[in-house]
Image (cartoon, rainbow, N blue to C red; front, side, top):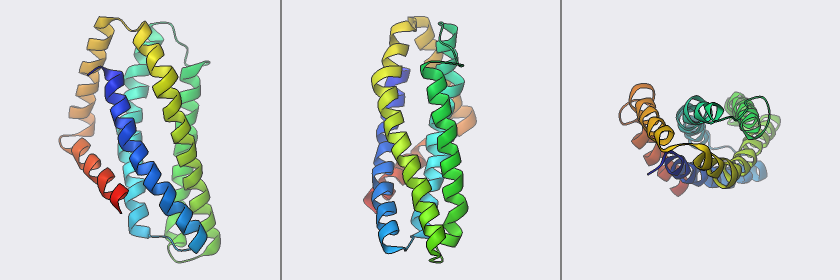
Amino acid sequence: MTPTEELKHEHRVILMVLAAGRKKAEEAARTKRVDKAYFEKTLDFIRSFADRCHHAKEEKQLFVKMVERGFSLQSGPLAVMLQEHKQGRAWVRAAADALPTAATGDAQAVESFTRNLLSYITLLEAHIGKEDNILYPMADRVLTAADQSDLAASIARVEEEETGEGVHEKYHHLAHELAGA
C-alpha cells in the first residue's frame, strides 16, 4: 500500500465518524439535547486520530516531501490544506468548549456546539474530497519511488513513536462504535 493509499484508508474511517457525528449533531440541534458521552468520544476521535495521527502524517511527512519536489506551503494546494486544518482545529476547539454547557440543555450552548461541530464536519468532508481526488494524485505523480519508500518508513515511524502501539487500532474500534451508535 502506498502512503497516499494508507492516508485514503484513514479518510474512510474518518468519514464514517463524520457521517455518524453529522446525524447526531443534527438531531441535537433539533431536540436541543446533547449526548455528552457520545460527543466526548467523537471529539476525542477527531483530536486524536483525525488531527494528531492523520493530519500530522500529512503535515510532517507528506507535505514536507511535496515541498522537496517543488510545492509551496505559502500558496497553492498545500497552503489551502494547511489553512483548512487550522480552521478545523478552531471549530473543534469551539465545539469542545461549548459541550459541557450544551450537555446541561443550555440552548445557546447547544446551538454553538452543533454549529461548530457541523461546520467542522462540512469542512472536513470537502477537504477529504480535495485530498483524495486532487492532492494525493498530484503527490503520486511528483514523488519518486525513493520518496514513496522514505515516506512509508517515516509514516510507520510516526505510528510507532508518536502515535504509540495499539492507538491506531483503538481509534479504528472507536470509529466503528461511534458509527454504530
